[in-house]
Amino acid sequence: MARGNFGNTEQHKQAGRKGGKAAQTNGRAHQLTREERSRGGSHSGGNFRNNPERAREVGRRGGRE
Image (cartoon, rainbow, N blue to C red):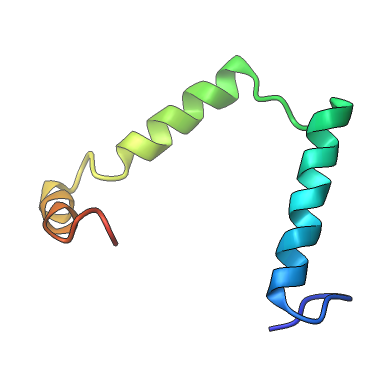
């Protein structure tokens, strides 16, 4: 599926990759704050907190949801 001015998704990925690298190089990339880092850790580990059966099922499939 073409997005915007790009003919295919591969061109879109390449453009995004170049933009990300340029932002890192120029020091303009988003830097996470301590609070954002903390929230990210709790979200990723909290997905199965209240659903152990789902955690077991996903584990049986090798982590692929």
